[in-house]
Length: 501
Image (cartoon, rainbow, N blue to C red; front, side):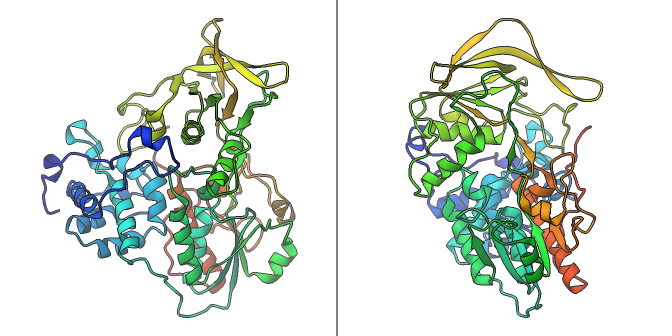
């Protein structure tokens, strides 16, 4: 630590955003494109705040980053202006720091020692430092293909090209195996491509990393549903091991609220996917918010993505509903003490641009017109209660009804797990009670030689956990194929973030 008082001299500084009026006119990333020298100097100052703690909770696998990112090390290298070595240290633990730097909610920052007290000025802006290292790495040509020197003669199929599948594929390719990634969509990336809006991560960021994987030797097949277009028998015959990274895309629906069947009531992904396809040049989205009053039900990341997408499509109004009370603006030390992930109000850039958020409310019913299209909702103030077994129920606080206009309703209330698919049936793999694919301590499913990682195993989670599981399953597959492995394995299958229970 060069300056033990760095955090006292410099306050936390996040990346500047473009003006709201400008952001709403396009789909580009919300953050301002700065002059590289100006950006780098600001980030070097921010890195000076890092205290090089004796026990760095920021890269703890349970409290902070599950990848074990060497945060104090690359913070100090950035402070010194050694961007190339900082890039090497960052890529040593993270295959895709430009993804996590843009998309991860940063549990590392919640676990930063400077997050203990507000008097310390807040956590180091680790996510900003990480993204800048990644961008400088590409700008200066530090990112190069890392090709294997020796071939193992083994072949691995990876099913799914989201962050978990791509991380596993890259690690296994670099270990000398021949890897083929199968993607049922027409383009690669999974949720990175069609779930994450362009304003959060422009797809050129994904495409340049995919180009690196191709140069390293990873092969890709798009438009191919494994289990249908290629059978399990063919898969077994052609490959020595299989990695399932199929995600957990089965959206949770609301089948109890009257009026759910009305036209204009959609699951969140039914809105986000065509919107992202439109940004790819596939033509206008068939589910557009233009000229409509939009209601987003659900207060999480997916709801915020729908929120920002609807405003950019030209919605007349956007209202996001959450049945829970508004979280506090600062950490409650009794409910979520440092260094666990804090229960606080999270405001995304989309929330700053337009629209409104409502808390402790729930829809009593959706009401439509004579053509069967939703036109307004009936809203009630509610309280969420738990019984002795932990089951939740939503209880109205009064009979008072509020009516809101609604031409489009988007259900962003989470995911129920892995989609039902022919592949799992033919592999004789059953889903757990959580809708996920279980595995043993070696990441292997009940089907011999078939491994699982990412959301398919963990359930809908963070991009950083997906990459961590992809790296760990690569170690397990490499060991399965060769008897041993030098690949890193940052997490174990049953590992959970530190939490108060």
